[in-house]
Length: 144
Ligand code: NI
Image 1 (cartoon, protein in one colour):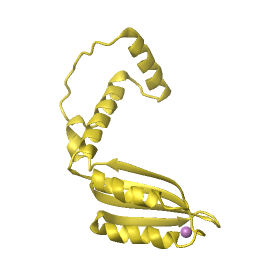
Image 2 (image 1 turned 135 degrees about the vertical axis):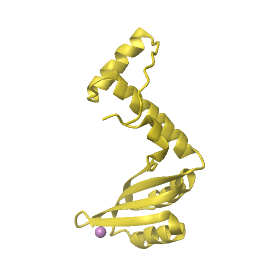
Image 3 (image 1 turned 90 degrees about the vertical axis):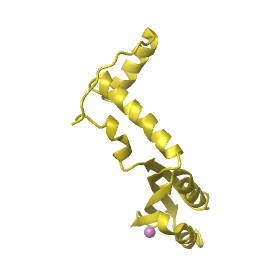
């Protein structure tokens, strides 16, 4: 467990009031954990925007009856080569498929691959989540 340091933050009263309402809504037990999560989020955003490798999961929901769509999605993944680590496919119902594609590479490259798939006609929903292995965030590690 990392050693803890205490720090004080001066905040506008109104801002703190609104912040307390937000963290209560999100279920935080105290401000410290909420501050830690905000700091981690900022560090993660910095990491994702940097040139360092990150991991990404792309979740897609698409209509497999749209002509050539499944084939086009496969082609984009093959073109991405080693960036694609794994893909899982679930047949949701008669029309819709869910696909989760796990990738590794620079944030910008992963976003480009995701955008290529998201732009295809028949892809109804999609979201790319970028994160890191966690090693780079270790210095703000969870305390629970
Ligand atoms: Ni399917």
